[in-house]
Every structure is written in structure tokens, then in C-alpha cells.
Length: 469
Image (tube, rainbow, N blue to C red; front, side, top):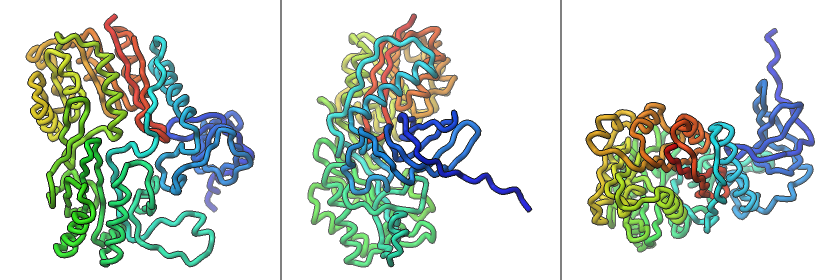
């Protein structure tokens, strides 16, 4: 007989102590850390362990003995199933406290850097309908919750358009009303669904690779412009045009209506041709007196209002006088570079994605900005000693890397470039802390500002100002 598998225990009457990274919460069981999903500090629960390791366990709550005194009712009917907005049941002030503390803990424990007095986290004025972009997926069968399955009723697996269930690539929660994006987002999605039902348009089956409607991207701008991109699995001119014409008639506020025929295995459209059906092939976002052109594949911060606050704080930390050469690393579509250009002598932007750099150049052009230069390529290959000799010594550097932080070669090049001041914007304070530790001998942390871009989620941005020692 083979060895019996290590059975996963059911732990009873567990008191949840505090929040942890990635939206989980923590309890202690026999000196072992237990990470639990979908709970908040103060809850007393029975936990079904799903993962057991030497130093920690993970699990899901199966029964609540007591609810936390902090608990509030979730505002969304899909809470707990769709996997987004995990902290709706936690008051916003408590979310902010945790995010602020997480940033401080990461900088002190991982970075081991000396901190000045840390500014209070910048709250988001909007805590609902704050996103400017959502991507929905069509599925031939909607996801059934555990409760529905347990009911034993004969359930109708109608098609769905909504979001992926966490960690299940082929399961889609059918969304009735999403609280993330302002209208006409919900209305457009529901209109497509109703039209599809009425006209027998099939939804995609990701396992068997069949069906017609595949994904839907909606972008809404603060200028009132809207972009809609419908992806079909195969071409059917009659059906496609019928649906798109229906959207044109029903939603005159769609300024850019586009479509994609994606016959490949995965849903990404970055390598696909996006075809314009009606309107312009872009929309505009506005920030102060600057306009930013957004195409179907452009990156733009998904919370426009709070992105403005983030960039204002970044510009403030840069303390520019108009005489500086500024390097903006990981510039993306040049949003920060163009945002600070008025206060600088010259801004040099570097970014890995060539299409983003083309967007950055266009954004400078349409705003009449002529003191920016943009370069595409891998940061550690572009930002060389020769590059700095050619384009001038930076007085100030702004860096906004992806979640993984900066490559050690990039950190070395920054230290060699030796700007007087660095402003480090990060969406992951743990990797930011690691990078700060590498620069700590040469640069001192002089200001810290956390910014909440995504209410009801565990994500938090952080800005650090560094001065040469």
C-alpha cells in the first residue's frame, strides 16, 4: 500500500488577527501562520486548510462563529464570487490604515532603510466606478457557485459575460452590475448580451474552442469619450455587422467602435489587428491642460482621477525649477514625462514597449511639447554609460518600474548616473524596498507618500523621494 496522503485538516474557532499581503488575512495556529481568504480581522471562523507547509498553511472559511465588529455589508451582488473588490466588507478607513502600514513595514523590514516621517496615505475620492477600462469575457456556460450546486436544483447553465473566477481559466461569473466602471459600461455589456440572446449569437467555449463572441473591452474617459472593442472568434460578416450596428444606434456616446477576429488559443489581442468599425481609432484623456491619445492597445493608468493625484505628487517630489535634465525610466506612453516637461529643461523617456514609445512621441506632439525625447528598448541595454554621455547627465530621475521592480544592472547604472534626486513610483512596495536597499549607501529616503489607486483591493502605489547623501 502507498503512503496515505497528508490530509488537510478542518481548523475550528480560529480568530483572524490581521490583514496580510495579496488580500488575505492572518491567524496563528500552534505557532504556525495561517493565511485565510475572504475574512477580515475580528472574524472567528472554521477554516478548511487547502495548503499545508512546514512554516505556514492556507485555507478558506467554511463557517462563521462571529463576524468582525469592523464588518460592513458589501455593496455588490457579486461580492465573494467574482474575486474582484475583495475588501468591500471592510470600511474604507480600515483599508487605508492597512495599506499605509504595509508600505511602512515593507520599507523598514525588507529595505531596512531609515524613513522620515511618512505622509498620510492619499485616499481615492471615488471608491466606486473609478476605473476607466474593463475587459469582459464571454462564455457558453456561466459559472455555478458552490451554493447553487449544493442546492440540488436543476440549474440552467445560460451563457455568461463577465469576469474569470480566480484561478479558474475556463469559469466566467455572469455579471449583472459591476461597480468598477462608470456608465455606459454596464449598459453596453448588457445590451450586447440581450442582442446575442435575441439573435442567436453563440458565446465562446474556451475548452472546445467554438462559439462567436469572445471578449469585450470598454474604455471610458474623463472627457466623456468611450471606446468599445468586441473580439469575435471567427468572422461572420452578417452577424458581426448586425451587432456592431446595433451598438452604433443604441449608444451614440461610443466615439470609437472597433473589433478583432481572434482565432488563436488565448484571449490577448496585443498581437492581433484591431479594425475600426465606426468613429475614431482612439479616444482622448485629459489631465490639466494636457491631452493623452489612447489607442486600443495603449496603456493608461486605470483610475484617471487618482492617476492625476499620483502624478501631481510625483512632480512635487521632483522639485523641478526648469533647469533640470530629467530621465523618466519605464516611461510607458510618456504620461509622467509629458506631465513634468513644462517644469524641466529636457526630459528623456525610456520604455521597453516600442508601441508605447510611439504613443509617448504622439502625446508630446499633440500637446506642443518639444523638450522630450523617447527611446525604446530593454532598460539595462539602453541606459548605458554611453547613452548618458550622449544625452546628458540627469539631474533628476523618475522611475516607475513594473511590479518586479528594477533589474540590478539598472540600479547600478542609476548609481553611476548619480542624479541629485530620484523619485521612485512603485505599485509593489516590497520590490521597491529591495531596490532602495541597493541604493541606500548613496541615497537617503527623504519623503514617502502612499497613494490608494484601487479601493476595495489590496493594491497600493507608493512614491519615495531620494536625495544624494
